[in-house]
Structure formats: structure tokens, C-alpha cells
Image 1 (cartoon, rainbow, N blue to C red):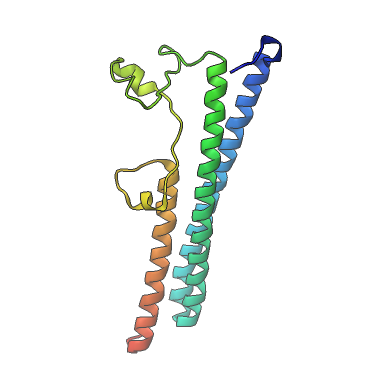
Image 2: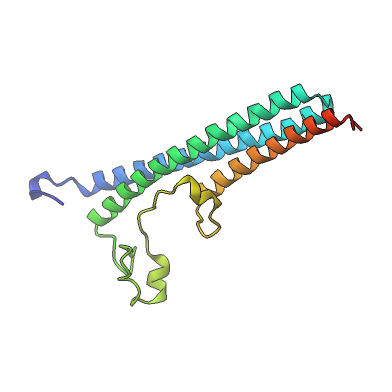
Length: 178
């Protein structure tokens, strides 16, 4: 890890770098949640526009906005997942440098099954690098983490907007306006 002792950073510098990495991670996560909130508000606005105007063009315009915002929200979610992975690797490296990865403090799971023989309390408290996921993971019910939850919600809102558009057009074409 270190070439020679004189090049080694001070422990306080490593702690400060770790604190900044945590701050960056929390800032990115906050932005990801805010993007989801914006899309949810737009989805609620779609319902209001559709109910108030009952016009396929108005519904199409509002629904398209929701779908486009959901697509950008998905992009933000995937981009921030990459950032999260980089920051967690940085944090894990800082913890390792500070000597914090011990079974009695912060156990580290290398992902090779070496923790299987350890007590349950060690396995439960173990940290490991987060893994990237693909768009297919959104539809895998066995995959779960916060970023996937947010991505699934974006997809759900986009599907809802699509359904509202299709239903409004169907009602307009069939002439069954209530």
C-alpha cells in the first residue's frame, strides 16, 4: 500500500479524506432522492392535468414530461450508483489504512466465503464493496438495495404515466367520456 514510511499520510488526513467521501456519498444520495421526489410530484400533476382538462393532448404533454423526467431520474440513479461505488471503495481503503477492519470493530467481507466460519455477529456486521447493477436488476425481485428501489420507483412512475396516456386516448377514441 505504501512505498515508504516518509510518504505515508497522517492519520488525521486519512480520517478527513474518509469524512469527505462520506459527505460526497450522502450528497449524491440526497440528489437521487430529490430527483425521485420531482418525478413523483410530476406524476401527481399528471393526474391533476388529466382530471381537470380531460384532453388527450394535455394528458399526452404532461405524461411525456413525466416519462422524460423518469428517464433522467434513472440516469441520475445509475450515475450516482457508480459514484457510490467509488466513494465506498475510497472509504474502505481509508478504514483499512487506519486499521479499522477487524472482526471486533468493522469486519470486512472479501466476498470469497472466508467469513462463513466466523460467528453470526461478525458476518452480520461485515462491510464490502457495493456492486454495480444492470438495468435488468430492476426487474429482479431478489436484487435489493436503495439505488434499485429508487430505479424501480422511476420505472413504476413512467409505466403509470404511460397507462394514464393510453387510457385517456382510449376514452377519447371510444367517445366514452364521463
